[in-house]
Amino acid sequence: MRQQTEISDLGPFEALVGTWTTESVHPRYPTTVVRGRSTFEWLEGKRFLIQRSVTDHPEFPDAMAVFGVTAEQLSMHYFDSRGVYRVYAVSLSEGIWRFARDAPGFSQRFTGTFSDDGNTITGLSTLSHDGSTWEDDLAITYRRAA
Image (cartoon, rainbow, N blue to C red; front, side, top):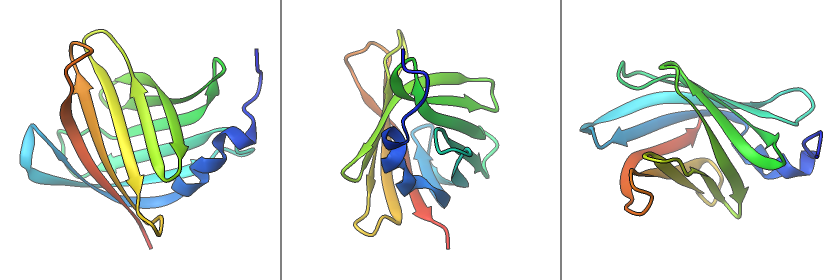
């Protein structure tokens, strides 16, 4: 078993490091733009990347995620203010950030595409309750803060 994350495994995630403003729309609130902020920073040693996110809407949770190699897989461990925690497979290559999890009754996928200048990420989460039919969930745009 691999004991430590190789720094090269997380190298592409350097593109996320910094502070981003966010705007998202959820199907439950289709006319509401939820604004927020997300920061990505390395834990000393660059073996784990930490994301912290907050929003300005009381129905949307604040969250944190930790990216790194665990159980020999590049993964993202997600935690939020509701007490929800999930583990996703994660990747970032060629300007596309992806994470996904397959779980009975509630599978999820996210694809975020970086703009050419790397300062905007346009993302969409989809979900499935049966593992085969997918529906749009959260649409989110990240913009690098000045």
